[in-house]
Structures are given as C-alpha cells and as structure tokens.
Image (cartoon, rainbow, N blue to C red; front, top):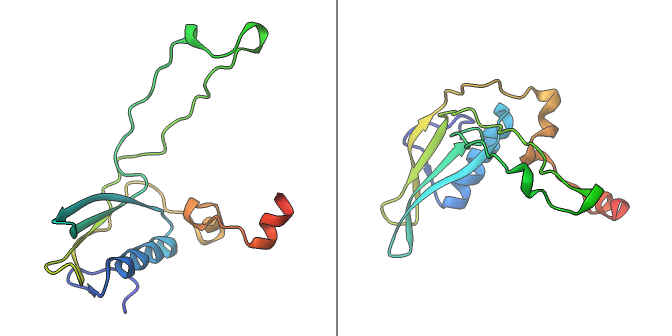
Length: 138
C-alpha cells in the first residue's frame, strides 16, 4: 500500500482508512482532526478528516470586569491564541455499502510549515506515555 493517499484507494473499514490517514499525517509532519460525517440510516456514507490547522477560530474577547475570584486573588482568563491557519488539506472517504471505504477526494496543500522529523514527538497525536512513565508521574 502506498504511503501517500490517492483518490480511488479502497479500505475494508473506516477504522482502517482513519488509521492510514493518521499514519500518513504522522510521517508528513502534521496532525489530523475529524471533520464532518455524512450518515444515512445509521450507516456512515462519508467522512472528512482535516488538518488540525483547518478553519479559523474566532478570537474570544473577555470582559475584564467579570474576572473570577475575590480581592487580591482575581484570576484573569489566559490569552490563548489560535493555532488555526485556514489550511485546506483534507481527505474525504465515501462508501456505497457502509462496508468498504474509498478515497473520494484528497487535498494535500498545506498553508503552513510541516513539523520536521526531530520535532515529531511534540505533535499532539504523538504524545503518548507508557504505563511505566505514567506510574512515575502519578
């Protein structure tokens, strides 16, 4: 099986197709978010997976008079800037029977830098702890 998705590729299940795209993203240097689902009578007929930087989140303003806490211990909400860049990279899987899934559309073009091999472990989807590491932390 090719490492790079191509339109027309077939998968025996949606889970297999999802795992394939997540692995492709990991090797390419980006992370994936689940997009929209097209469902008919409880059967998934279409599924989108998008780059995690797809779309734009509106910047949330907060009212400084409504900070939580009393007296000296007032806590302001942390300013957290969006990581979204409006990236258009995505993949669309479709199915006629709900049993096998085909790559219907694949858009590769990212509008942001991809992560290099040396920094792959910083990506959210690659941050995993072993049981031993968990036991040392907790």
